[in-house]
Image 1 (cartoon, rainbow, N blue to C red):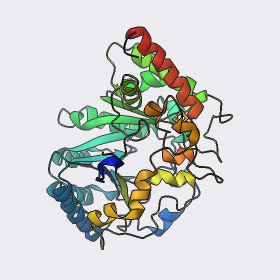
Image 2: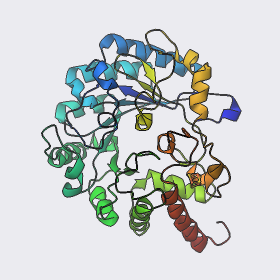
Image 3: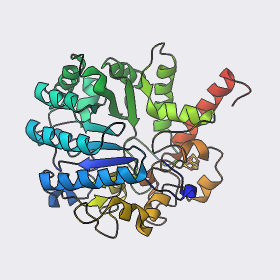
Image 4: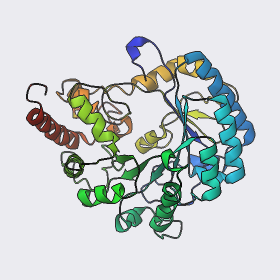
Length: 382
Ligand code: SF4
């Protein structure tokens, strides 16, 4: 990560779309259910030739920026590669990007079997699994193509990892999409039983044109209340896992820094590499509309270096877009903590990204609670 003022733009996170299809059909998925059908034009899987170009370009960029970054095998569902191809891809990436560069996989977990886990162990690939809580909550939205809940398979996949002493340390975390109609204490307890060292929680997608699921109005605080409940469970847990979103916000309330996009005012260099090698913006921007995650120029790892892409005016614009531009954010006392939220969640037809996040009221509710807690605990620091 770096700031625009530094004049330096570097890669922080590369989302490597190795598969454009998924074995599940989660009803809230921004890839398949937000009206952008670009995935249909992509090959089902990244080819070896494209992966060779990816590895070469990333190695060149690492040599140049000399700051490690993370590559996340992403999809669709990246484990649809199968064992043999996953092994080839991991071997080439690890060869191009030695430690301390991180290689991770974001998976729905349903295909985490022994041979797959063997490969992930061999190449030290960190694992993050998407699971939304207990079975009834998870199966409400995370279903397969016949509409059947995926909880049983996903839970078995996680247990396949945690049962092995050599694989357990690779489980970096579980990622849950918030159902604001669920009980946050119940979700916290269910996620914790999975044994992952980190919990990631994400709001449902939405913007000023399409309200997120469960949010009645822009100024309602369903997500703020839910997050407050989750925070209460977290803070009362004598042996808590990490909760990245809350940790970041609490650190910012206390005057520290964030480590992840979406809160705070640090800029991040995030790119997506599509299965055909095209380089796109963060694909969460699909939430703002079809094609919003594309650069004007169609760069590809087959023809363009990351140095060229990162130095371009178009990338500078994309990078700058992370900074909240709306007058409300500019004068907001919570700006340093909230950061204006995810760029995709600021979208409206009339003002483009020049808005606070659609979760503004929720953010303010949660930050107010954190400030009260900080003041009570450290009366001179908050
Ligand atoms: S709380 Fe609202 S106004 Fe303040 S920075 Fe966040 S989105 Fe902007």
